[in-house]
Image 1 (cartoon, each protein chain N blue to C red):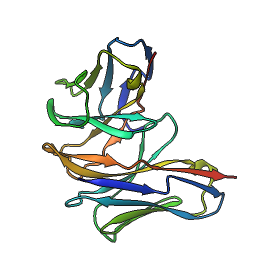
Image 2 (image 1 turned 90 degrees about the vertical axis):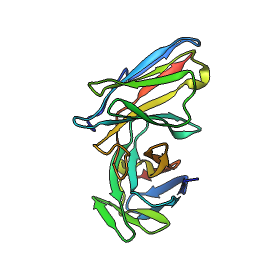
Image 3 (image 1 turned 45 degrees about the vertical axis):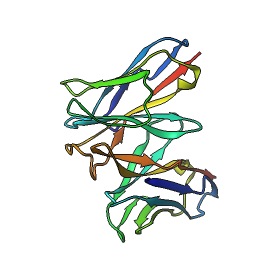
Image 4 (image 1 turned 180 degrees about the vertical axis):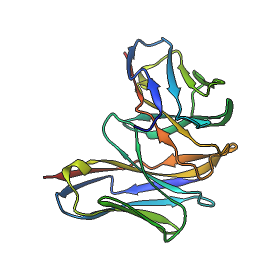
Length: 112
Length: 116
């Protein structure tokens, strides 16, 4: 069964304190790994898609990397506005479709 | 703005009632996905439609049903509502691949359902 596990469940950082979030996955034949940001009561906002081991993508203070078993979301010098839940997802085969299966997320709080 | 539109944003209804949630996908997207998010369950896949046809079912209750219409908008019907159905319901859409392989999905802002 395809699985996605995110750690830690929650993370508190001081403004400017860099850290990394982890997403480990088990899937037969990776067809992309997706990172989303979700604010409370809002829809997940797409951040990155990674397709192959070694791939990296950056957006402002965020950088996502991918290996054959896991992905990391590195947050450099975070600001309070980076506080959110970060979700990763991996498509798994269901019926005739590849359906993104989501991890439980990492809740990030950045203190000023 | 993801381009995925969901209505209503909030609704409160009584147990035993029926509600319909509506979703308009991004322009040009043929796939629509429905997810349920509750505090203790995370994002749970319900159902996937591609160009009007049901393609995959997740943990969708028999009391729930969905459709995708010729104009590609979709509706999720929830009936005989129970307190435990209170949750955020998200619609997402993606591009032209019927299998969804490799497609990024884009979410709407959700419909917050409270059953009292």
